[in-house]
Every structure is written in C-alpha cells, then in structure tokens.
Length: 315
Image (cartoon, rainbow, N blue to C red; front, side, top):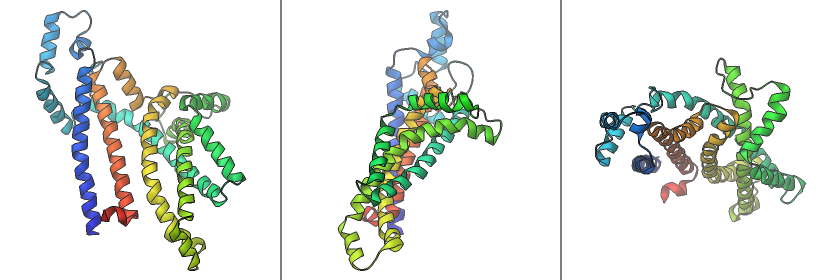
C-alpha cells in the first residue's frame, strides 16, 4: 500500500507541470495566430484610438510573460475571461456546453465497453474460426467508416423515419429528452471506438492465453473460471486500461465532428465557433479544459494499471 500511495502521489505531481506546460503552449500558439482580439471586440468601424484603449484595458499591451501570469491567475480563480463575441463569461459558456459533450462521450464509451469485450472474448475462444473472422471483419469496417458519415446514416435511416430521436440540437427539458438527444451521437462514437477496443482486447487475450504462466497454470490443474479470474482477466485489464484511455481521448477529439454533424452545442461547437470568430479567450478556455481532461484520463489510467499490476509500482 505504501508503494501504491507513493506511485499515485508521483503521478499526480507529474500532472501539475504537464498542465502548466500545456497552458503555456496554448497561450503562445494563440498569440502567434494572426488577428487582434481588441480589433475583433471593437469592430471594423472603430478608430485606432478606441482600439488602443481597448487593448490597454484587456492587458494586451503588457509583455507576453505578464499577460500569461495574469491569464493563469484568473484561471486559477475560475475566471477564463469574457467571450469576445458578446458579454458572456467563458467559464459559464464552458460549463453549460460541457454537459452535452460529456454526456455523449461517456455514453459512447459505455456502449463501446459493453460491446467490445464480449465480442473480443467470443472471438479469442476460437482463433481464425467463423466468429473470429466475422468480428475482425466488423472491426475493420467500423474503423474505416468516417464518424460523420455514420452519423448522417443514423439520421437518415433511424431519426427521420422513426421520429424517435431529434434530427439535431440538444433538448435537456427532461431526462428522457437528454437520452434521446445523446443516443445517436453516442452510438456514432461507439461504432468508431468499439473496433479499436475489440481488436486490442482480442490480441491481448491471445497473447495471455498462449503465455508460459497460463500453460503452467493449466498443467497444475487450474482451469475454467478460477483460471480466468485469477490470471487471465487481471492481466487483461492491466493491458486494456491504457488502450481504453487512448480510445477515450480519440473519442474526445471525435466529439468535435459528431457535434457538428448533429448540431449539438457542446465544447466541439464552441471550439469551432471560437476559431471562426477569432475569440481567443473562448478557444483558450475550451482547449485548456480538454487538455486537462486528457491529462486526468491518462493519469487515472496509470493509477489503475499500478493497482492491477504490481510490477509497475516496483519499477
């Protein structure tokens, strides 16, 4: 337990400079993008004097280092600034739009986790058999299909004929409306994610079941559920958790496309709108939040692997 506690503390401490480095990189890259936030906020008809006054009030005339520390100081207190297109707070915008994104993301991940392991275990029981071949063909096709095309097909084939699901937008009037709004986008994400988890789990299962310690365990008389629960599943989960984290991050990137396809006002839509309007504060806030989510997922995956695999803690 002591080694595990130290390992978790180490991973959490490593996450802090990673987040700081990410924030600095985002800040620098946004300052390299052509365009003046003061000009955008003032409008095309504003004179140079008004733009300079606005630039001074926004702190854009300060050195970049001072601007960075001012920005980070505000973020640490929950102040991401205001959107340049309107008077709303970026923090409020992110909080409201994060709900649809996270709902779709976790819904798609849950569907993928339910479907992928069952098919992977089924396929690995008889390598190169009919079921294994069918699963591999399905996973290959699933990875090849573009998410936006899958989303459009679900709209045309399911949403329009049945009228069970909204064609676009996000309705949060009730829990049932939220489920209806998130169902097709989550299924679209799951169709893209499940094949990756499935192929990874199948390959890992074949490696584990053919390894020396499994052969030795069988020679000692272990078989059935006892062998699977004590040796196979523990090692399988330790190998699949990092893969699941990678798939989760890829799904987070795919949400941008999915939200555009279904017209959902989430973080992906906020990001594309901020880039289109040169709203630096909005882009900076959304990218930083997404980056923190990615770092948190990878850190959690490392901790879970350390719990499952003592070799990680020892090393």
